[in-house]
Image (cartoon, rainbow, N blue to C red; front, top):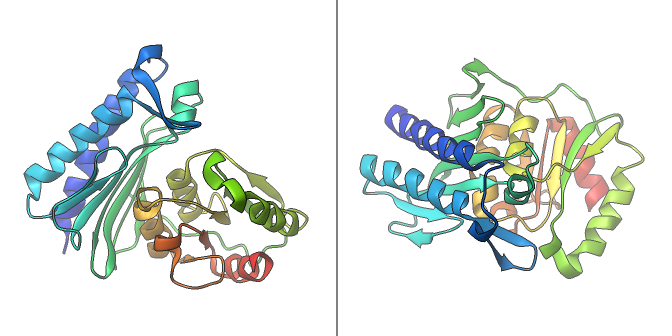
Length: 257
């Protein structure tokens, strides 16, 4: 089930990745603009989304589409949710940590999804009820039993505004217990790395649907847990996301509440 959707997802992500590789460290200054303060977009984002959308609409014209750059169109119950370049600031600065995220959602949630890291040749994929794969091999969240000694990914953006003190408060409670915290600047890739067991968990506020649409499915299908910071199911709507191996997730909820 969903083989055709999965294949379309992978093909679209790969095509988007090829566009981005062409532009990485070769962007002209005039091709970069600022949507809001410190929130950048480039010709690479737009061209990658255009190529991704063309492939998905050709294969499944009945599905809707939500992209970070182009917005929403068509059926909003069955729709592709796309971030053509997660980690745009990294990309613009030449920092090699960014990815493509493509996912299909229906009324029950994520159906199939892919997070592609073209630079490293890493493809993380999952389909509902069928587990998660990293470059074709099964992947699973880490066996870390709890927060103490965990290796965590965190995220925060300039746009957090008056929510930043809440993030700092949470950070100060988690920091003394974790083995390490990393803020690399690409939420979809942080979620993929959590699903693969590289990170034991991840938390961030202010995320958008395209940041988490594929990565959330990876975590769930890899045996992890995902919720908002209160342990509830509003993470997709609220953008406050906590994803981790089960024991780490339990402890993080207690620490972040």
